[in-house]
Structure formats: structure tokens, C-alpha cells
Image (cartoon, one colour):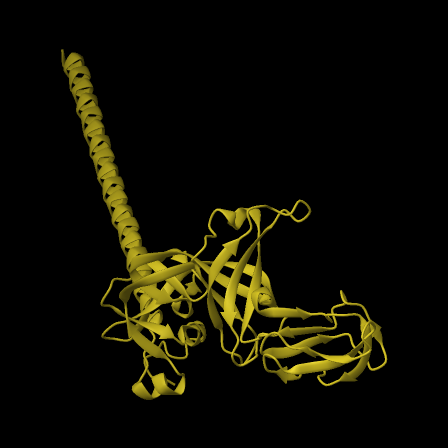
Length: 341
């Protein structure tokens, strides 16, 4: 009986021991899971804090980049760098076609002078380049028929541009011995390529660039040939130009701008205002803090002006002259700190 009780007590103790061990193991597991959860929470907070720091750094860098894009100039700087500020307004954009041309005599004011009778040249009174009046004597010729001299006179007022008469020379009655041209007007003969034929019309204004230091000359298309040259595949257009100062010498090759269309645009700026910054066509806009490059979209343009479709509105002030200087200083950072120099 005593032996049986001892065995029962031993079994009960073992069961209590095993039960306690299981409880302790369960507690340890729960503690480990809690530690892992807490550690994961801290790691998540750390990653989130890192992302926030990166975003703050990026935003700060963007602010600094924007600040660097501002050019601050004093009134003295504007004068020193010859920078012109204008207000954006609407305007008229003129589209032109550039055509090569040649100045020639006005054939309607060019006299070809020949003797009335064959004979010998007895006297030459006018030389190349001489200015003559209508009816003025150019030469004397002794008639081969009557052996009496007669006068060869100028049929118009103008300049002697050709002379084929020398004393003692025998000339025929169909020989052209003088050409006299009225150079107060000349012809501009323009070469019109096939691609431009549909755009060139009679009545269109023409501006001729003569050369450095010489004023442009304006005229109007008065004639377009009805056929195209079979060799060059070009047509000819003509304009009559005033030549009072004699600057347009026949034989001179020139370039002419023919006005083919005119458009009213909401914002028109000079091409000098346009600068490429960060691969974007931009205009320096005046703000309360300085001049800031602003990307724009351009439309039609000619040699001097461009249409702005978006990015610059009428009424805004912008740099029309000297924008290249601002771009150069912006790239060097000379004015980016707001201290001008």
C-alpha cells in the first residue's frame, strides 16, 4: 500500500514538471514573437524615415535648382549689358520667300541708236558714262550717199552705257553704235523655283538687299513669265525699282524678299528673345524677384520675328534684346546668388 502511494506521488510530480516546462516554453515563444514584431516595427519606421529624408532632400534640391534659374539684375546691369525689356503684345507676322535676282536695264527706258544712213564716223562727241539729254548730238557721220555729214542724236535722256563708234570707222545703217539708258529706274529679274511658283503673284511687295551699308530697296512684282525655262525649270518674275541714287547697277546680283502672306498673331517677339535652355526654347520673363527663363512654344517665324503659341502671354514683360547674355551669365551662375556681381 505504501509502495503504491509513492508511485502515485512520483507520477503526479512528473506531470506537474512537464506542465510547467510547457508553460515556460510557450511564454518564451510569445516573447520572441513580440520582439520580432517590435523589431519589424522599428525597421519599418526607419525605412519610412529614410524615404521622408530622401523626399525632403529631393524637394530641397528642386528648390535650389529653381532658385538658380533666377537672374537678378540691377538697373545698372541692364544698361551695362545692353539688355532691353519689352511688353509682349500682338503683332503682324510677314512671311516671305527669298529669291535670287539680277538688276538689269529697264528695257522700256533703253534706247538703241543706229545711223540713218551708212557712212564714215567723222566725230565722236559722247563717251561711255556720259549723261546726255534727249536730242543731244552723240556723233557726226559722213553719208556714203551724199558725202555730207549728219548728226546722230540721243532719243532719250540718260547715260551712255554702250558705244561702238570711233573716228574713221565705216558704219552701216543697221549698226547699233550707241545705247543710252535711263537709270532712274531698273528692272529686278527674279528666279522663281517650282516650289515657290504657287506663292508668287503680281502685286506682291518686294524688298531687295543690296549690300552692307546700303539701304534696302522696295518694289512690287509687275510681271511673271507664263512659261518655265526647260533647262532650269524656273520662271521669271519682274519688279521695277527706283534707282535715283544709282546704287542699283545693272548686272548686280541680289537677294529679294517677296511678301507671300501676312498673319495677325496674339504674341509676337523678336527672334533675339528666344534662347535654348535645357533643350527647351525659352524666353526670360521679368518677375518681382528677377528674370526667369520660361519655356515657350513657337509657331510661324521669319528672319526677324516669331509667333508665341504658349508660354508667354500678352502684357508680360520679357527680355527682347540681350537674352543671350542672360543665358551665358545663368550658365556661369554669375547672377544666380542675387548679388549681381
